[in-house]
Length: 260
Ligand code: ADP
Ligand code: MG
Image (tube, rainbow, N blue to C red; front, side, top):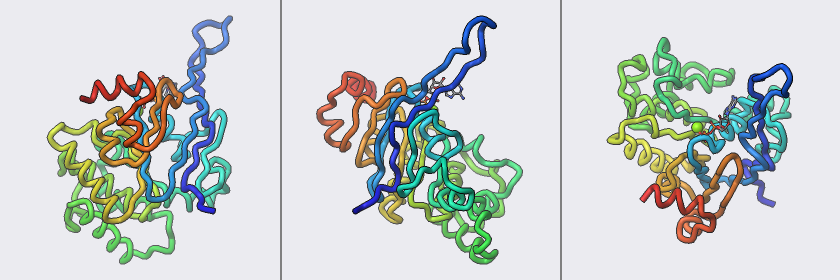
């Protein structure tokens, strides 16, 4: 039996908003409702949907940064949100994330070497030399230089910062990278470079992505399967070519038309 890396199973997330009146119950937003899909090793999955469709909420739940209101996220067959602390730390090394905004996601006070090494620091077994070697390897893999480890984030452009964030995600040699709109905050001129890099890493290191975007064309470029989210629900999913060639849902057709 082959086990999927990641299984998102009827995942639901509700947020309670502040009360507007003493006499009424607090309003609730359903950010995700019964979302299910699987990510097999080596088969990248793209999640597309317009702003507010629940994409970032999904990313936070898959990274165990928040807990679900219902359903499960299974990592290698186990309920991620019920793992014991040691098992969760182990899962977190294998599951890394690249955030949208490389200005907000890199600590400005830390040198690049520290930032990139951060996911390794929970691993006591990785000694200092090995850590430096891994950081150098990760920086070079994203087209930066080993010597850049001594610099600070402000010395880099937006596109280079996102390369640093990608190096940080790679440094543990993860099985899955969750990328939440990793090019959207960048200048249009460098977006393609970052996406090309992510595709090269896929080919070179066999990285599997859960790749989140509002842009169907971007997802098509990097992913084997597509999940289309609308208002927190899956409206369509399947192999990328099939979804794009014959989109069954009008919402998917609208997303395609918007991208053309
Ligand atoms: P996307 O990333 O696709 O733009 P989000 O996951 O950020 O969508 O948001 C989905 C919905 O959930 C939106 O209606 C948003 O306002 C709501 N939401 C997200 N996070 C919170 C939160 N922490 N508290 C309340 N509502 C939230
Ligand atoms: Mg988002």
